[in-house]
Length: 313
Image (tube, rainbow, N blue to C red):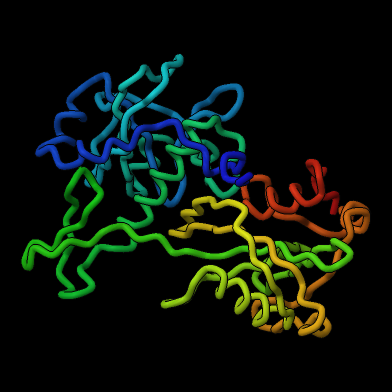
């Protein structure tokens, strides 16, 4: 079975309601409706409540300053103490002064990268949708064809060059991540040059133009480790909008007949190690594993057979 439903950022309980995006004046109408709920985003983070547990801070538009960019995320499909069925949800994208005026306590602005696992199903889905679109708007101010400014359209899901009329749509960059096993059912973990010392994870990389996911698995593994693998099998996927990725998980088997020793590329990967289950458990006072929001952590724990305790290092 796919790991996707169990991944922290692949959960969702919001109807994206794509047909409504084409309704003229939708954002104006929803902002004027006190029953609408708004999630605030700033610098790749979202605003959460002062409450027991972690919950997004859903506010009525009338209690918020309206920023330049507002996006329609969809409508609720379940009722709870915060939202009823059919409640429209907007994302408001704030600049520095606006965000700090709204909430100066920066501890209440949280990153999905580190906090997504602590949210409920609906909030996790709202968070990644809001941040993916916020990052896209932030990175696409001008038309790649003409250099002219882009204006938001279709409730925030399209950006339009007002001079040429050409549209720019959100994009997602596919990246593969691979759990490699050998004949002894050990896994290989690597340490990236950009990470803190002793942090290890699965090998991963972006899919190149004109490349299948399976071909990307074989290429990235060989480039980063010198290992040849076979039989790549899809296990699940998770959005990773930091800023715009989709992590596509695979397992693969070491091709013992076509591979040699571990060879870190020295540029991205500076160290590689094989781990049995016992060796991994015994190394938790020395090795820092991926965080609980990541697909890497879920894949490692799926192989291990149960949740692992946090590293003690």
